[in-house]
Length: 381
Image 1 (tube, rainbow, N blue to C red):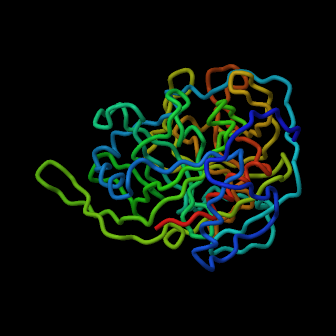
Image 2 (image 1 turned 60 degrees about the vertical axis):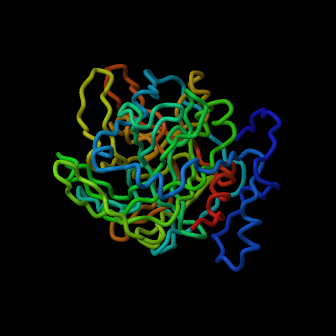
């Protein structure tokens, strides 16, 4: 990758960490190591969540979860047409962090893909409210997709940058929570959160997305607190949640591996919860259940509107709502684990027929690893 000119930035939390080093996350040994791990490189913006975990979890009733709409449709993150493909270049050696509870040998794609794919329990929906807006207004209830990813303290969620930071108001979102394997029923009381709800404690995003809205850095890694199991209780016509402790996210669903500086042409699965319309208005998805695509990535054209120079894309008809969902390299249906190698960011109508036919992700390089590493080493209760 050709380094971009970057403004001088003052780190929010401490000293520079080494970038692009291929290694597994070590085991925690002391409180002192935790304090050191919370230092951040100058290109990482770290922000504490404004609500406590109890406040964020209590905000989301079954009715509010059911009424939430996807944020990406409103932001209009899409491209029409297809120009000359660019190229993304590694900025160092390739690196890999293994997933939790799965084999670590190899990161290649599957040789044969069955029509039946076991969906990963790590993937789910992230819910949040718009900053600066009335949180009680249903228009403020939004969602994206995301996944649990490996980290030292098993508390990391990977998603898109625009799913944690609002490029309209230039603020991080409020009441941010992650619900793995979420299923949205026809009625609010039919919704399923089989592994509980995990509120945000810390957001980590790339400085170039926060400052410049550069979609080559449209990714984020969120540290969540220990979760709450949700048991529905009917109170007349209203359904409420009774919350009980659920433990750490990674202990309950595992965590996908992480890899960076890989080839631009690899086979990947993309998972997410699409809901938005195609440009022609057709809505083939509801956002209620997880969907997937499979294909071989390749460099996408530059898009000045989003400052995109180094995105990868592949053939996939998922629409908005899938934004923030993982691209998993070497995903194995038997273990439901792979290696995070991208994040759904932008939908493309490459042939101009008013139907999305590709999705794209920022290329994961050493700078992506910088952001991931801060989250992967941050402890939360």
